[in-house]
Structures are given as structure tokens and as C-alpha cells.
Amino acid sequence: MKKIGVAILGLGVVGGGTYQILTEHREFYQRTQDVDIVVESVLELNRERALSLGVPEDKIASNIAEIVSDPDVNIVVEVIGGIDAAREFVLAALNAGKTVVTSNKELFCKYSHELERAAKRNNAGLYFEASCVGGVPIIRTLLDGVQANVISSMMGIINGTTNYILSKMTDEGSSYEDCLKEAQRLGYAEANPTADVEGFDAAYKLSILSSLAFHTKVPFSKVFREGITGVSKEDIADGKTMGYVLKLLAIGKQSPEGIEVRVHPTFVRKDHPLAAVNDSFNAVYLTGDSVGDVMLYGRGAGALPTGSAIVSDIIYAATHSENKYSTFKNTANADKDVKFISDFKSAYYMRLTVEDRAGILAKIATIFSKNGISIVEMVQKPARADGKVPLVLVTHETKELAVRSAVAKIDALEEIAHVDTVLRVVT
Ligand code: HSE
Image (cartoon, rainbow, N blue to C red; front, side, top):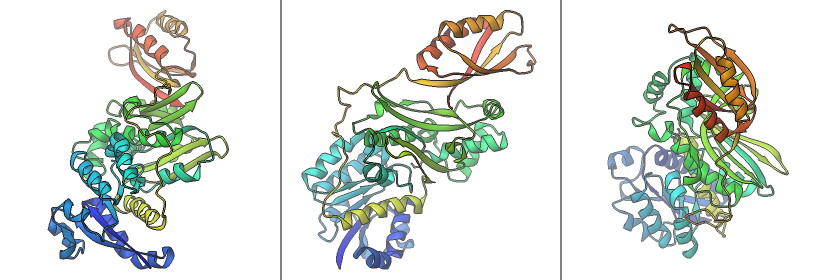
């Protein structure tokens, strides 16, 4: 039986889960895959942690050089995260002809061109299923399952931390700050939650996923990004009354006009399949020209779900003699022929605070009309203590820049009217 040696760089949550799956399922893979996958080495500065997971003392390496020079190691798993050391270690492994499996979305998003070049030069594999949406097999789906299709649209809830926070705000009517604290207490959100709550994590993933879906490099710099830190419980409650649920959506679209890629809090109609994806669960909803709609749902993080993605990549590499690389020209920047759309189309939810007297609505309606914005629904809420009234409305589909122009003109009315919230809506 073929024997494949694996080295794991980093035994944190994901590295620990990967080690557990590989050791517990060793016989299962021998039987079902006809391959003996053995953990030959781990690189973990915290020796106690490695020993507590059951790693034999003689399998704990002292440095990366020991691993890349070990002829028994065929596959190197990078789960240390961050950029500098991870990039150095991955390149060292690839340059030594080892196949690399990584969960590092930021590294892959920013340096996939460099890593893939090194992999091809050294006839090594480079696999990254775990970099996007944890245990949900979206990368393999894009690389294999839906290859027959021209994909026109991909919408995803691809960050569990923000989905947990928004779900809790929706269910309990609590504030963003309280739900963030609860997410931190439960270990869903980091002590410094910026990467998740400001949408960076989702934007790295969207850059990778849309490059694969649209067969062209979609750099991180092209992703429009807005996080959830400004979301209020009032907007969530008012949206709910109008039939919407708020999600941090990652949206990628491709049409003859170009590509649009964006991450922002978005109201989705409560009967949309993505509206039912709650707590820390993730989902991706794809539309292909032949297959139609496909939705994948599952856990986007955690030791065993992410370990599942890593081990599936290891098994793929261990059971295929040809390496599989991305289907697009993998360069640092976008192809100059590709047009990226920043003035995208969407429906919008807005909350305004206005003076409660005759003629104000007419002024606002005139501004909307001059910017080609048509209103679907509008609700005037009870007056506040200062006598002003909140107006909550949803528009028909319109252009992003038209909305920004209208908002600037309404805000210029100063005490008369002010736009407090603008959120995009998927109907
Ligand atoms: N921090 C991510 C999330 C998981 O909350 O979904 C790793 O990508």
C-alpha cells in the first residue's frame, strides 16, 4: 500500500483537529483509499500542546528545515496562519518538492500567484480547500463539480462570527456590542475582532472564490468591503417587520458588463434560502448557466470541520498522480482586459430622520426622483423625543452611485433631514 507522510505546521485549533482526524481515521483511509497516511512530523513551539494531543516526542520537529529535508514527508500542512512565517515555510516546502495543503486565506488571497508558481516549478501540489468556508467543500465544487458552467452569481454567508452576531441581534433584539461580547465569550470572535467584523476575512475568501468561479484573477483590492460594526438593532428590527433578515453577504457577479465583488451587510427576503442560515453556520449560493442554483451549507470554522477540509485535500493529493491548479492566469494583479464594476445595481434600505412638517417628504421625493430612485415601501415611525420622525424605506433596484448622490443631497438639507442608515437589499 502506498504510504504518504504528512507534516503539520502548527497544532492550534485547526492543526489539532487535523491531527485528530488523521490519526483516528488512519485505518479507514487504508481501507477506503488504499493509502496509508501517516503524520511523520509536527512543528509546534508549544511541546506540551503537541504531547497532550498524543504526538510522540520524536515526531516534534525543531524547525522547518528538518521537515523540508525529511524524505518521509510528502505533504506539508500549513495551519499557522498570518503571512510572514507561513509564506516562508510554504515556499520552503514547495521548493523542496513537497505538496502543500493550507488553510491560510490571507496568504492564499495575497500570494497565490507566487505560491502556485513555486508549486508548478517544483511539480508539487498546492491545495487550499480549508482557506474558504471551513468544512464546506466550496473550492472542490468550483474546481470540479460545477466546471461545466458559466457562473453568473455567487452569494455567500462566509463568515461565521458575523453571522452569529447578526443572528443573535435578530433573534434577541440585542445591540451589536452585547452580541460581540457574547461571541467573544463563546470563542466565535477573537479578542481583536476586526478581521471578521470589518469584513476582511470574508473579502479574502471572496477574492479566492470569485477568481475560481470567474476564471480570472480577482484581487482583494477589487472587493468592495463594508463591515457590521455600524449595524443597529433598530434597523434589524425594522427590516424584520418589512420581511427581511440582515446577513453579511459576500457577493460576486459576472456579466458581459464585467465583474462585481462586494462584502457588506445585506437584507435578504425572509424566504430566500440564505435567510435560514443562522448562528455560526455558513452557506454559498451559486448560479450556473447549466446547473441553475446550487447551495452548499455547513460549518465554516472549527477544529474538525476545517480539519475535514484539510484532510480531504491530503487524500486528494495522496490519491492523484497529477496536481490540480487553479483554472485562471494566476497573477498578482487583475488581467487588464477585465472590467470591474463599482457602480453596481442593488435595491436599498434606508433610515432617515426628518422634521415632521408639510413639504419635507416632497423635498426628499424630489431628490430621489432626480437620481432615478424609485421607492417600493416607506414607513413613518412614531416621533422621537426631539419631535423628529424616522422614515424607513426600501427602493427598487437602482445604482450605487445614484444612492450615494441622493444621500449627499438629503444630508445637505441639514436639520430638515438626515440619512442615518443605508443597507443593500437582495430581493
Ligand atoms: N473567522 C472565520 C469566521 C473563520 O468567523 O468564519 C475562519 O475563516
